[in-house]
Amino acid sequence: MLEQVLESFPDKVKIVFKHYPLSSHKLAVKASLTAQAAHLQGKFWGLHDELFKYNDQLTDEKIQEAVRSRGINPEQLDRDLRNPRVTAHVQEDVNEAVRIGVRGVPTVFINGKRLRDRSYESMAAAVAKELGKQSTPK
Image (cartoon, rainbow, N blue to C red):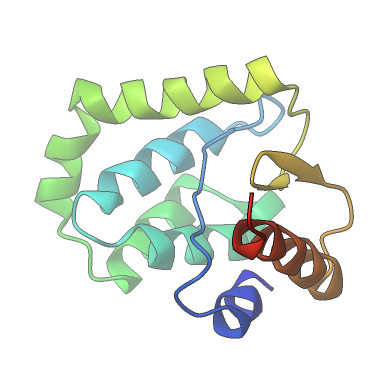
């Protein structure tokens, strides 16, 4: 879905991912930290997509399998998982989500406005509306 929006508005849209590991999911924090650490190797999105395939069936073994399948250097990943900046980044995202009232995932915002309908059509219309505002003289 997000890929379609990017394709529809090349050079106009930027996707920003924010971590919000749900407390009801026992491996959500580990998955978030692992994905953020993978970002330091330029492998965030691939790992993110792989981990989300498992959703409710995520296990430690599946996290490791996803890391291997995405060509992430395991020694570097282990070092990065111990990096306090990785933990701080995830915690900052969680703090922001709590502050703005996020209650579940995925939650989508376009220019700070929560999008309730996450269909491609709704996203594309919201992006087009925001782009129209930018081109309107003030």
